Length: 183
Image (cartoon, rainbow, N blue to C red; front, side, top):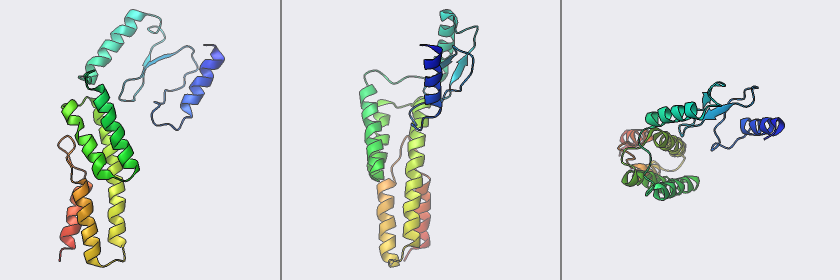
């Protein structure tokens, strides 16, 4: 790459809105090298080390030890499929299906590594927020209380799914709402 292409690529990455791309800090020193682990926190390779394959390998091995066990190559496709199903279901507000897909990850990855934990946590937070908004609509709705109560009960039934032994925080909120508005 020329210096200009390198700078252009750096600017493109820095200004992207695509959440799948990890923002790597821009340093005017060129070239500069980074390790980008699945956790999404770039680690700079110093100028002295970036020209030594042995030093880079040493840093990579040290990083691998911090990441925990990786996903078995036999299960990569199943994990990607489950994550894709969860994403698609969330986009359609099918939160129960999304949670079921995320819960299914435990079949393939019983003890998720930090990067998978972070990704699942992010997806759960997005679902939790969407369900909280749905509850707010029921709470402020103008329908009869019985109709709203049935709606909240149906919502609770859809999202009361454990993902890696944890339920969405909003599940407690839904239960509290139902208790408060019990007949």
